[in-house]
Length: 256
Image (cartoon, rainbow, N blue to C red; front, side, top):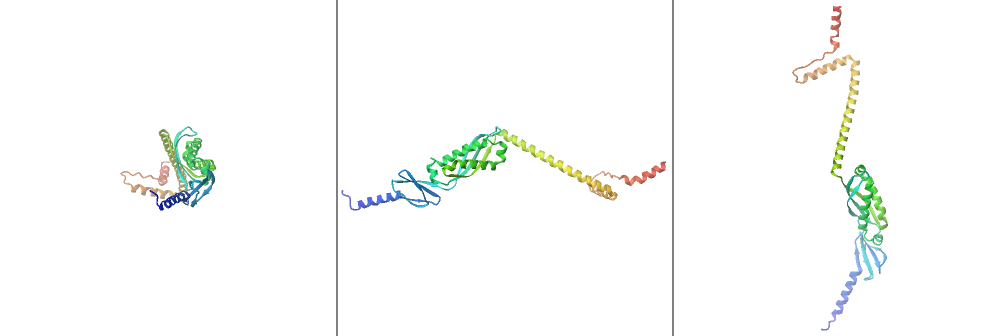
């Protein structure tokens, strides 16, 4: 059977569609295309419509968005010989698509490996107390070192955060005892300071009352009112010596 006149047209249309499918690329705003022509780098293009030469040009798509990457838990021995397990998260993005494709085979995997080794190296030089209390300082140091190592690949590491620090059970109990002892110490110091301030005020009040006998009498009457307000079966009334002093002097003179 001899093909009809429409057969060549169909072949041409299919061939044109195939060429267009391999020649036209559309990149989003956050994407760039690294173009290789016959194996040679000719540059990065995008976003928008990209025209390629079929068979001759090859394009590798690269995303410029920030990538959050979990750093797997690492077993670390701190400077004071405490074994902890630490994981982290790193945020990075591609700044130079050409370097990210040409200078390193897999920039995501390479960045992950650099983050893991740097995490073990930096935290291994820190003591446990600084690891728990100086988290911001350690995060900044991690970000700086990892970013310096990924910069030749066109990758910018913007943030590195230590997420969890898992301590052994015995170390958790030791830290809990230390915190409890610290709270008790603060409580005793506050109590002692309160006693000191109260004694100073009582001393000042005693000096003021000693200078005014009428004040002593008023304080005595106030004390009686406070005692009488209590529901006690037995009440003791303290009698100032000044009240009975005249009677004692008169009795002494009579005896002499």
